Structures are given as C-alpha cells and as structure tokens.
Length: 237
Image 1: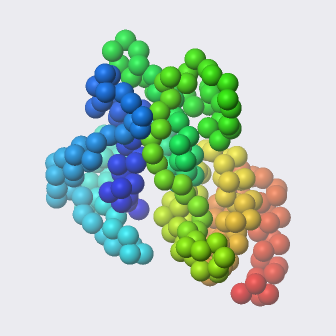
Image 2: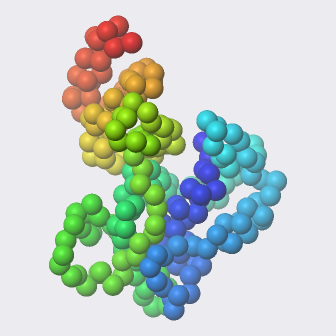
C-alpha cells in the first residue's frame, strides 16, 4: 500500500529501535523524533527503488516493483516476531495511540536504547497524576490524532473529510499484528467506524472488514453483526 513521507517520519519516530540507532543519548528531549534530514537521506539512497503513486489525492511511496518488495521482506521481515511488531507499530500509529501529547516509553541502558514492551506499562490512554519511575523515560513523539473523519465546523457535522488512510490501513495492520481487542472495540464494534463507512458508500467494504475480523477472532458477535447488516442492506443503501 505504501506510506506518505510524513507518515514515514512519524512511524520511524515511534520505533524505539530506529531511534536507538540514530539518536545520541545526550540529545534526548521532548519531543523525541528523528530529524527530517534522515528521511530525506533515506529517500535519496533508495532512489530508483521507491516510486511515488497518487492514491485519493495522497502521494504514497511504494516499491518500484514486486520483486523489490519480496527482497525487502526476505531480508528484514523473515522473522514472524519482527512482522508482528512492525504491524503493531503501524496499527498504533493509525489508532492515534501516541497522539495528543501521550508519551511513549523509551529507555537508555548500557550505551544502547532498549525498546520496552508497552504492555508492561499502563495504557497510554489512561491519565494519571502519579509520578512513576518510568516517567523520565517517556517522550512525546508528536504523532497526529487519527479520527475517522476530519470536521471543519462542529456545527455542520455533515461537512467532513474522511480519513482514508486510517480507513485503508488500520484493519489490515490490526489483523496482522493480532491486536484483536483493538480490532473488535476500536474498529468493528465502533459505531463511528460503521457510520462513516455507510455514510461514504462503503457498506460492502464494511461487511468485508467484519468478515475478515471474524476469520481472525471467531467472535460470535461479529457474525451476528454481519448477518444483521446484510438483512438491512436494502434499507440502508
């Protein structure tokens, strides 16, 4: 599918392993992000391997051909755990998990930065005034909020712009990373998602996503939801 240049910069800034390789410890500060010149250098070094493609008025960077995609996959994503972590990171980005000033854990140990498992810490969406020992290792990555739609005026709810990037990417990355709770309650059983999909004429795509989620989770509620939606399809469309 590809990524935009801004998305690439944001996602690399969420990747603790990448940051550990490129940031000097004494430069740790909020916000903690990679510099744009690193992204520019990366693009320059991959010239000829990456091409730009316009999708819904958005410029995406994609591999120039399928052969390059397969080579990159073999070199860097042959380990299933690495694949899982990559999709989980992308899912967090399109969920907006670290937006709005929510800080992500980041530690320095033995002259190397070590990525911590987020599940060992409190939910980033939970607010707490208690100071913990890990607070000093948490940094704002300044990634954007990811609503289903962008509204210009709250007084005119029918005028909005759909977040097509989230619509396109989120379900795929949640299923590939095995984040079934986020898939169930953050997307499929989320009324805002379903309402938006119907509003923009993507009823069939919504059914496909529900079926996909069911194939991964085997949750009976999803099968019931799909059956119910199919029964009212004529009235909705």
